[in-house]
Length: 206
Image (cartoon, rainbow, N blue to C red; front, side, top):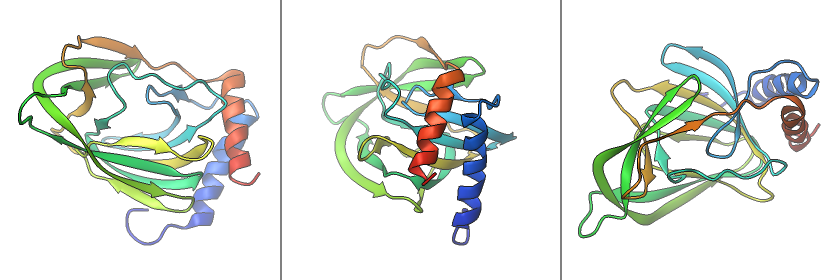
């Protein structure tokens, strides 16, 4: 997916197969991501991974403990299966005058994320935005601050490929006086996962 044009039929067929298994109640691993989508981690090989991300209006919205503006320690390539997914790309720079946010390092583990305030403060500006519809591929390099925005009714899905860049941290913008804390990643299973999977299959056309 990172080189030539993607094989749309292959990607959609692979995603549909995974979602059908989840909709039928098979034990497919999935978690509620703190940023508001359901993540189905498919494969992890060293510093690379593949996940299916599903945003669903059928589930309660997420309320991040810092903010939804963040950057990854990996290069991200995403293929939009259905819906509209956008990225708001704010300006995040060393403060000239009073800072607006503190950077928090996000350290992920099996049970959740540790959010640790750093000594770095920044100033947040409006920046730019980009939007992508079904069949589009978008890329976000490691270290680029962004905020994911789902258009329309709030339903969308992507296949996400990540390739880690050693030495780079995962960061989130947070309040200036925020303290260190932990955020659990709750498993998504049972009727919740079946509901999400059925909605995604409907969004893909059955």
